Length: 69
Image (cartoon, one colour):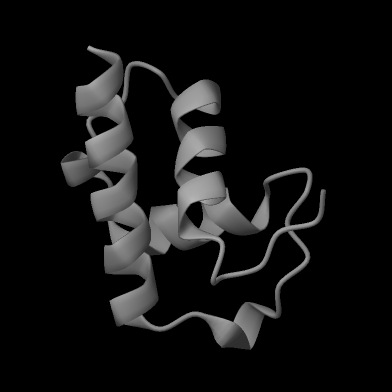
């Protein structure tokens, strides 16, 4: 399944799977951008990311991590 910037929940789940021990709030947006664009299923435009989208991904990742714990 291909994902883009608007697939925040799927991105968050994949980040949680790939980086299970990382606190999402400790990740800088520059690193988050890199990690998202490196996800195997990601095919969004690199110019499609804005701070607001990265923040939404980070918050969804945090929520998913809290639900898992």
